[in-house]
Amino acid sequence: MFTPQVIFQIILFFFVLVTIHEWGHFYFAKRAGILVREFAIGFGPKLFSFKRGETRYTLRLLPIGGFVRMAGEDPEIVQIQPGQTIGIRLDGRTVTHLVLDRLENRTDLVIGTVQFIDIEEALRLEIEHDGAVEHYSVHPQAMMVAREKENQIAPLDRQFGSKTVGQRALAIFAGPFMNFVLAFVLFVTVVFLTGVAQNVKIDGVEADSPAQKAGLLAGDIIKQVDNTTIGSSSRPLINLIQASPDKKMQWVVDRAGKEVKLEVTPTNNNGTILVGVRLISDKRSASFGDAISIGWSTMSDAARNILQGFKMLVLGQFKMEDLGGPVKIIQVTGEHASAGLPQYIFWAAIMSLYLGMFNLLPFPALDGSRILFLIFEAIRGKPVDPNRESMVHFIGFAMLMLLMIAVTYNDILQLIRG
Image (cartoon, rainbow, N blue to C red):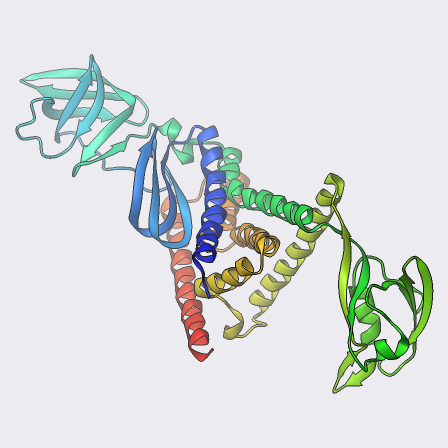
């Protein structure tokens, strides 16, 4: 059951993962001098919006991602043509506002007919007013006003396409990279919270089990099994037990500081090989070095598993029931949040890593595809036709939305079926 605390943790989970990704795009775009028009969390209708500096920050209805809208990525704001009647607001001889409609009864504007305008390179305007042609400079942060909405103009040097291939690639790659950074920080945090396993200890022994018959006791630390050192992980022990049904195994345990040797014979219970013990890890507090080392190895193992999942997806080695959408992710996130803080943070780390890796796939509309276009541009020495690239990304986005609908429908069916 989702308590208010769990619901808050689910919302925080999505907000942090998406925000850190989009912040990566935003920060490096700003460093490159690109005008960032909007920083959005979610898609669809706006729920909340405010403007700070040159950027509008919005929270949107559908919590399935986010975006950073940079000047020049899409067709720029409404173009002004010679012969068009507009109104301008001035600061001395510099245009600060270009007003395109509802000019009637406006006394704060100079209204006239455009003779020449360049708001990308020359930043110059010639307008005929009261029978005379006046020449003005246009402020590089001038606002264009149409249908009661203001949009800042974007001179060519503030547009995405004017930057070097390296600057654009960095602005795109920074999103997934920030997810990797967050994942690593979270994996390290989990190590600090849970400590470092030193050895495998028996937490309990089942009645009439092979373990009880062999003389194993709760509190015994398992040191060796069949001359194999067990160490801090229970995985080698489990593997040895599974490979030894109805076979005598030589166990060496530490019991209150004394070495005890025992013979244990696992039983085969309908294909399940058991000895009848509950295992726990005997842990100590993690040092900084422990946290970095274990956090990195955990992240590497998780990355390999994610890549294996991508491989299975590409090869079609999955069923529709294996795929999960937003509903499934919310459900699983709620389960991890209910399991305690370390489990919740671990799941957030996994999902942050997954989000970063997924976005680097060379699929249209994803960051990986956009980087691929930039690599192609660097090789051929000129960019791909922006209209063609936009069409490719649009088709890719539409396909992703169709997949999202399909997996969400599958999620709902599975919930109904229990």
